[in-house]
Amino acid sequence: MQLRERNRGSTPMIGLTPLIDVVFILLIFFMLASSFLDWKGFEMSVSITDGKSTSQSDIRPITINVDANGGLSINSEAVSLSGLVPAIKRDHDGSPVRLRPVNGANLQHLIDVMDALGRGGVTDVEFVE
Image (cartoon, rainbow, N blue to C red):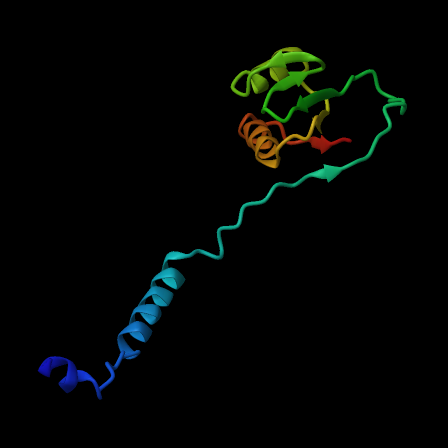
């Protein structure tokens, strides 16, 4: 009983100084660990086509369809991500490449395809609807 009566009048003090120190140290850590200069981007052109336009050249464009599951097809022929660039180089070298999301394709799948194309040396890529 004596302990309860003795501590009854005083309230415990919570110091904010250690909390402020920890937040400040975390702020400095994240500022030093972040890099704001190494932004990587993709150069791309967006064109909306209706499929009825006629090409003046004899080169038929390559259409890569990317579906919601990450499945790929080149002109309606299924292909894997690792076999995408070799198939383009083998069968359609020099043709313009069109990237078409179908069935609600995930943006990450489109970026993966663009990254694979860029690493393979394919630089002329268009998005089509």
